[in-house]
Image 1 (cartoon, rainbow, N blue to C red):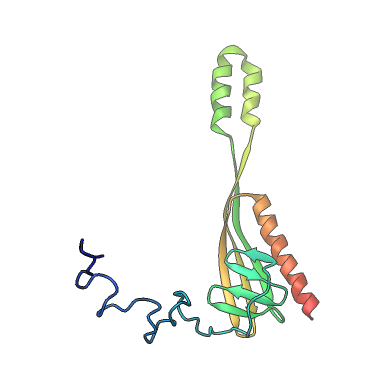
Image 2: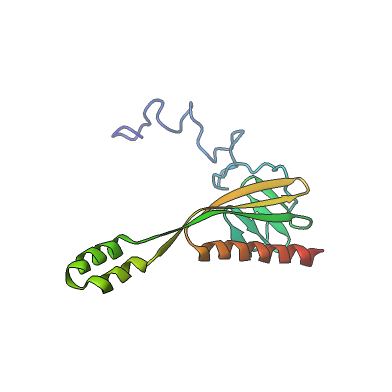
Length: 168
């Protein structure tokens, strides 16, 4: 911020009290390099940039040789993957079928009761995926709302298990 004549306001933004990013002061990168926080080493980070991500399950991503989790990365070799299906499937008569059956009772008695045989399946819960390896333990919970979604999560983990097997 500045005054109409262009002079900076006291205590507002970069100035003597607030160094600007790229000023070359300690804690900031040299001028012209952009402002990015320093990337310190994580608990388990082998050197080099990560490769192309092949599959993602929740907040876990995998390349051909590495596992990428929010706190860092580790080698895919020697990891163990588990999936816990913590979902519940409920079956109920939908509201529309009850309404049609009641209204139909006034017109055609026997056939309207057939609408009470209609069932609706709902899936609710989470899938918990855990990866464990040398120096690595990470668990992610993924909300699940359909059986297809649960099968997709399980097939992604099976694909990752195949990558681990290929590494030996």
